Image 1 (tube, helix red, strand yellow):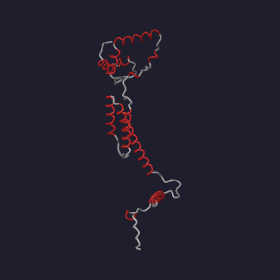
Image 2 (cartoon, helix red, strand yellow):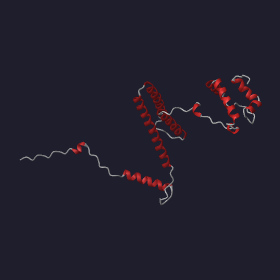
Image 3 (cartoon, helix red, strand yellow):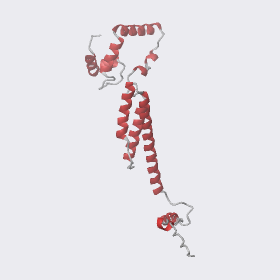
Length: 219
């Protein structure tokens, strides 16, 4: 109404309770309900003529009875036209993100990895982007396949380490005759002893395998 700029309008909203009541607020607000720059971009995208047309159509619909006051209590906004912080789900980005998440979880829980693949995965992701930009899709697919292999190796390594830790802290089996840690330890020692007592054929040296020629008898 006063021809204020976006910055002046936001300042008046924070200073005047009457403006906040006009905008539909029930309590005095000390912060803006929206970003000033987003309001500027929205107004510039729509334009002054379309904004006036939208306001005129809204007033005409209310006067004609097509819109009731309860229809203005809730506004549904199509979020597909709003910018979002969601990256395009390419295979290289998703695989690299999987490597980062698994490595972070392993470090958080103290799992020692054979190789984290973080550095090579970062380099491969950048290389895939360059190759796709140059139109070399086959080489990019080979890089993506290699990243998929790295992610599988990392997942299997973590699975083996977790399974080994679970076996180390597993309670004694209820089927043991004596439910004590020494019983399980004795059983493990017996199993190791049995494996070590397996029959292994002795190795003969090369000199032992050569048989001496029989002595010829003289007539």
